[in-house]
Image 1: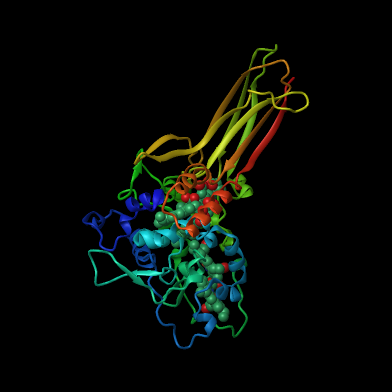
Image 2: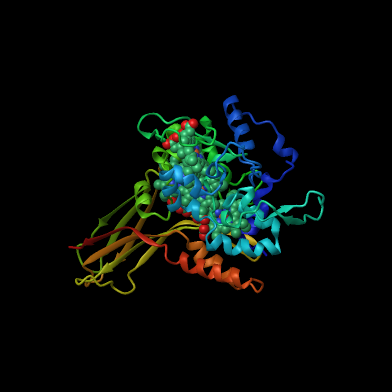
Length: 423
Ligand code: HEC
Ligand code: HEC
Ligand code: HEC
Ligand code: HEC
Ligand code: HEC
């Protein structure tokens, strides 16, 4: 069984099914330009991406290759950036550990996972038998490349269709790359103004709200809409302006403390200090979404813990004084359905204001406050432990998920910390 993700996907991927339902065909009232963008992406982002077919005979071996290393031999900067990014790791132990078993138990679900995690036709081992419409049986894909499969979201997934390179309009000024004279150039580049549109990222970072499971009215993945309905989406900045500054291929996210600090500010202060011991101390902490282009955080997976405690003169915590608030979306799949516990995510431009109160013991001399980010909390605490209880995992799949469980416990970091003396 595909577990939790399988269920989300089964309900979420209706929009990617080959024959659209009548609802999908309803005309939308969007402007002509928007319609042009929609048309471009509808054909560009067919996923799985159709097999590339035969390369032009004039291509050298390097120009023919779909491997990121081949692209990287001429585009060194983009390769170095991509290699560090999570897009190159999207077939890590967590997704791969599930996909490896799904490929046998439920090929359809495995393919659905790969439409986002390894979307090229050449990365997918199975293809649906054309002759069999009812039973959905699969046969081996003769163009399957097992090495490419584990390389995740490759350069070619975003840039190559039928061996033709697609890219943004030529960059102006400083960002322009010079290529050595005479370097083979894969017959040029099809340049389009749509590479810098947020819609380029949408299909993988947004579930269609019309056709997906809603948890308390919200799709489980809603990043594009969160952006679109904010000031950022009303013209201030698109995904690429923040996540690909100067066209760099960084895509930093919740796992990078410095990057998160660039969009999230924390302020703390003693609001009310009692004049005598055993009076009430009031302490405020504000976490401000100052430059995140969507909710902070956008997914159900991270949790952000805002904590405060009292310390004695030597800096030791006084037992029983630690308090905690959680920023995040706590939704869980329990007994066959999704349940929302709370949603305290911070919208763009908004803030989360927390007040901590203590009756002050005489030994208290300081307050320590800190904000701790657990990027993979949901996977580490809920999903992987439950998944590992399943009886029918292969040894290989189980090993990978055990690794993923371990890895996901190592990602927490402290975003902000400060100690305040008490008079
Ligand atoms: C043998 C060297 C070589 C290889 C291999 C190569 N490229 Fe290129 N690429 C070039 C050259 C030269 C240009 C400049 C072409 C032009 O401006 O017409 C270019 C341009 C581009 C551009 C537009 C860049 C710009 O400056 O605006 C993109 C995007 C691109 N390549 C993607 C890829 C991808 C993806 C791969 C791998 C699948 C790849 N290339 C493999 C040499 C290479
Ligand atoms: C997730 C999709 C994605 C992946 C993966 C990806 N790119 Fe890009 N790439 C883009 C987008 C989007 C732009 C344009 C950004 C903009 O206009 O701000 C771009 C721009 C470029 C450019 C033009 C840079 C310039 O200065 O004009 C080159 C060259 C390029 N990519 C090569 C690569 C190579 C090589 C890889 C793999 C190592 C790669 N890309 C992986 C989405 C991707
Ligand atoms: C619509 C695109 C999409 C589909 C389909 C999809 N994912 Fe993901 N997946 C994402 C995105 C985006 C992230 C990163 C955000 C997050 O943490 O949720 C992600 C993150 C993950 C992660 C955590 C990150 C990691 O590398 O450990 C796992 C595990 C995962 N997906 C497994 C799966 C599995 C298994 C399937 C199929 C049952 C699947 N995904 C289908 C888009 C998708
Ligand atoms: C083909 C599908 C696909 C496309 C297109 C795509 N992404 Fe992703 N993206 C993913 C998946 C899957 C992950 C999760 C990788 C993992 O951790 O396993 C991810 C991860 C990320 C992360 C890191 C998330 C974290 O948890 O830190 C950022 C940031 C991101 N993508 C931004 C973008 C932007 C911006 C674009 C458009 C230029 C884009 N993506 C296009 C599928 C995609
Ligand atoms: C104004 C800058 C900005 C814009 C615009 C923006 N982001 Fe982000 N994004 C950030 C910052 C800062 C973070 C780190 C904080 C966080 O994780 O929420 C982030 C985090 C992420 C993550 C990590 C996962 C998570 O739970 O937060 C993903 C995925 C992502 N962005 C995708 C996108 C996509 C897709 C778009 C466009 C629809 C976009 N971003 C627009 C700044 C931006």
